[in-house]
Image (cartoon, rainbow over all chains, first blue to last red; front, side):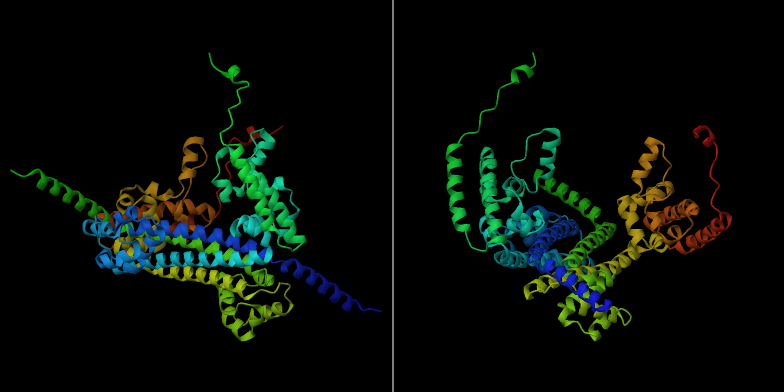
Length: 284
Length: 284
C-alpha cells in the first residue's frame, strides 16, 4: 500500500511538473520582452522630457534646435555647461550642418548660469535615459532572436516586433494559433470593435496590424482589404508555428504580395461616397 | 542721435538680461528636481514590476518571498539564474533570517529553465532600475542642499522634500510667499476644494501638507487643525525666505510645537457626530 505521504509527494511533483511545462513555453518570454519594450519607451520619453525642461533653464535655445532626443542627451552628457561647447565636439554629435547654429546659440543664450551640482544632476539623469535607449536596442535584437525560435513564420510575415505584439495581445502563441483571421485582423482595436457591436458604429479595419508597413503606407481605402489578407496569412502562419513547425512563410508572403498588388491596382481611386439617404438629411 | 541698429541691440540685451534674471531664480531648479524625483519614482516602479513579472517565469516563488524591491533587484543582478544561488550570497543581500527560506524555494522551484540570453536581458533591466534608485538618493541629497540655499525657513519647518513640493505646487518661491495660509493649507487638494466650492461637499483639510509627519500621524479629527497651524507658520516662513533672509524657523517651529501639543490635549476624543437633521432624513 502506498503511504499517504508518498502519495502526497507524488501529486505535488506532478503539479509542479505541469506548472513548469506551462512556464516553459518560450512565448512567455516573448510577451515579457515586448511589454518591457513598451515600458522602456515610456521610461525614455519621461526622462527625455524632464532633461529637456531642466537643461532648458541653462540653455533654452537648444531645446528647439536639436530635435533628435539622442543627440540632445549626448550633448548634455558629454558637454554639460554651455562654456564647454566647442564646434568640434558639437559637430561630432549633431553633424556639421547643425553645429554652427548651435554654437551661435551658445554665444547668445538667454539661459542662466548653472552650478556644478545642478549640471551634474541633469547629466546623470540624461545618462540613465541613454542607457534605457541602449537597452532598447539590445531588446530589439533579443526579440528578433527569440521570435525566430518561437514563431518564425509569424515573424517572417509580420516582422519580429509586430509578431511579438500579436502573441502578447492574444495571450500566447497557442491562443494566437487558435484565433480566426477575422479576430487577428482587429487585435488591439477592441474598443472600436465593442463600439461597433453595441452602438453600431463602423467596424474597425485593423488593430495593431496597422503597424505593418504594407497597411500603414497603403491608401486609406485600401487598408482594410490589405489588413484582412495579412490577417488571413498570419492565421495560417501562427497555426504552422504552433502545431506544425515547417517554414512556409516565404510562400505565404509571395501570395500576399500578389494579393496586395491586386488590391492596389483594383482600388486605385477612393470609393464614391454613398449617396443613399443624404438627400433626406440635407437641410433646406 | 542713436542709430536704429544700436537701439535695437540695446533693447535686445535688456530683454535677455530680464529673461536671464527670471531664469536665475534658483527655485526653478528646486521645482525641476522635485518633479524629476517623481519621474524617477515612476520609472523605478514601472521597471521593478516588469523585472518581477519577467523573472517570475524562472523563479516564481521569489516574488512573494522578497518584498523589498532593492533586495529583489540585487538578487537578480548579482545571482541571476537559480543555479547560482548559494546561502552565503543570498544572506549578504536579504539577511540571515530570510536566506534559508529563499534557498529552500530555490530547491523546490516550479519555475522554468532560462537561457543565458533571457537572463541577461532581465538582469540588464534590473540594473537600470537599481541605477534609477541610486540616482534618487543623490537627488534627495541635492534637493536638501538647494533648499537650504533657497528656502531655509520653509525647509526647516516642512522638511526638504515637502518644502520643495510646496514651491513646485505654488509655481515658485515668490508665488508661495504671496499665498495666504489658507491656500497653502490646501495646496495639492485643488480637486476637493473645487468640489467643495461647486457642489458644497466638505472642504479639504489638507493637501500635500498631509505628508508632514505631524499631520499624518495625528488623530483623524486633529489633522485639519494641525494642518492649519502648520500652514500659518509656513506662510510666514516663505515670506521670510523670499523677502527677508533671516533664519526664524526655529522660533516658528517652537511655537508650532506648542500649538500642536495644545491641540492634542484639547481634542483627545473624536467629535460627536452632529445629529441635527438626521431625524428628518430617517426613513419611516
